[in-house]
Image (cartoon, rainbow, N blue to C red; front, side):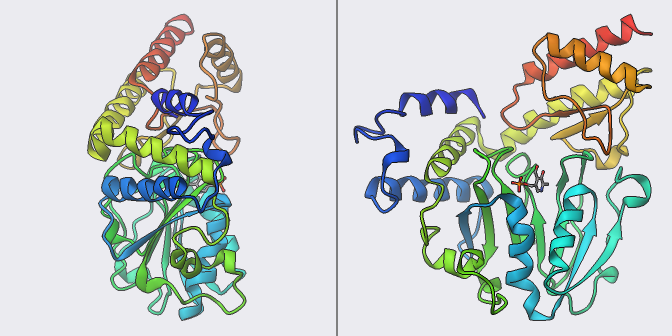
Length: 347
Ligand SMILES: Cc1ncc(COP(=O)(O)O)c(C=O)c1O
């Protein structure tokens, strides 16, 4: 999280705007809280340029709940859906969808350990698919769509958990966007869903109320007690990002941060980046050394210098730098400097 957000939250912990209460102690029906949730929504609308015909929902259960909620709400139209398989998270999404209908994996990059984004032309989609699901940024594998698949009339559904608000996306290209909050928005558990109005009301009859988009939309995300404090932190993050200059400004910074790391990786003779150049993520950058022993040695050395959470996922191995919006340029510079030093010492 951006440090100014944590500072502001600390300042307001015991007394939010003269109420004498912490936001956690407020009724979610109080005027003060309604103002918080409405303001969070309006800031997010501004940041992503979300048209009025899309609802913004603040839900719970993480992106993993959306793996079920999406098919429960959409697949009923025709009973079938298409998934593009690009890694660990898309695998979980499509396994869950199979419980509710027929799922076709229309493109996959499994053949090369998910180190690229497969081509997906309109011709590959099932004619009567209720939707096409993609994972815009693959957190573990470090790939990103640089060109969205053209799905024609079929709604495009995106798990945007690890790159929402990191770069500009045209919301009108999507039927649904969902994201777990814990990367670029706020505390884990909070889940943001942006859903086109005409896609609501198609839920399977047995869908629980808590899993029905239309019910949450009808109640302005206040059907039950929402994750009040998490929404408040998200509101502060959105305001921080607006002050930063919005998504375009942070995208520029994110591209600079990523380029510093990729430029070094490309010239290094010791470090390797597994992802094909054209599909490289600007949020998650996996890299490896030649042996596991070297990886361990590197991780140990950088940890001593205060750089943590750099171990790669076991499916990829090596290291992974997750450089979300709140990671300052300075943090990436420090990492690259230590990589250079490691290379000199271990040539
Ligand atoms: C792309 C993507 N999808 C889904 C998830 C799962 O999110 P959650 O833990 O909020 O359910 C993650 C978590 O890191 C993710 O990166």
